[in-house]
Image (cartoon, rainbow, N blue to C red):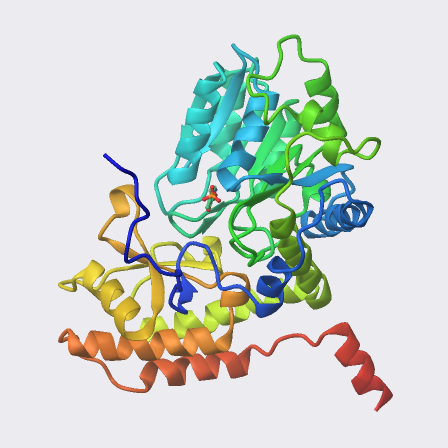
Length: 414
Ligand SMILES: *Cc1c(COP(=O)(O)O)cnc(C)c1O
């Protein structure tokens, strides 16, 4: 048999979609163009200077002074893994909260590190219950770490990270917090809340290309990892080795950094810094209120109680008698619009409307409402044309965005 080039393959041109699922989110042209800049060596002095800026901007995004704050080469799942593989020794007890898909993955991580998970379960659609966590810690005084997901993307729930970290510290536990979907969309305050290890991902509210995972570790974690008796059970993710490249004292080869992806992350973080974190959080909230107002005109109900809802990830129950997958298929086919489906037990029961980062804007919200209107109408659902857009319009009018500091200064001068 001869191996010949496969015929009929031509250049891949993906369609231009509007991404309103659980990530990746839409990417600003500034970030996409950063990707195509010249590739340079990962030890080039110009690149090394860019790395320092990248770390500084990540500290701002995480609201931390942690020296060890950098993007790991790999998706959010690798960010999760680097925390567990460095911090969990065989036999260590870890309290893990599970109220959706990603808490379940944390349990897997503990087991694969030969740790002993103590699982605190809450229903999907509910936040992590701090009382249950405190009880579990009291029953397991030898537990070393508390791990939980701040923003459960599978259900659209926000848990109270501040309170959970406070409880952990009262009993002397370290914390691992998943902020993959929260970072850039809702407040994440690593230092104020006393988070020890925190990971996120590039493709959700940071609106960068997938494949990078920003992480930050307190000095306490770094000291603990240095004192480990057993070597970390992963060469690639051994924090001490990674710091020979990303640390402050040396820049030596560890692995070939994904240089162009890092340019893109630099640009995405620069855009976040220009907008300002508070303003980015306000933008997510504002677009959420408008989307919610519109969705409710269709009779759609949210899975999550208002006080625990994530603005950037809206889980709503499928209308009775409507084919869930067919709605998404038509939205993609007719409008190039991607929505998220339910996972696990919620499969077929919810739609997930993501408005993360650059996807979080009025034009997407309005497009989505209009698209749903026509798709629902085509599928025999009774709709009142224009009602959703009107409701969203009023929500926007009632919730103006705070001005950028630069705009406010301009107005004051005028
Ligand atoms: C998306 C996500 C992850 C995993 O990130 P990947 O980049 O897909 O590996 C982990 N945790 C949460 C909460 C997520 O939403």
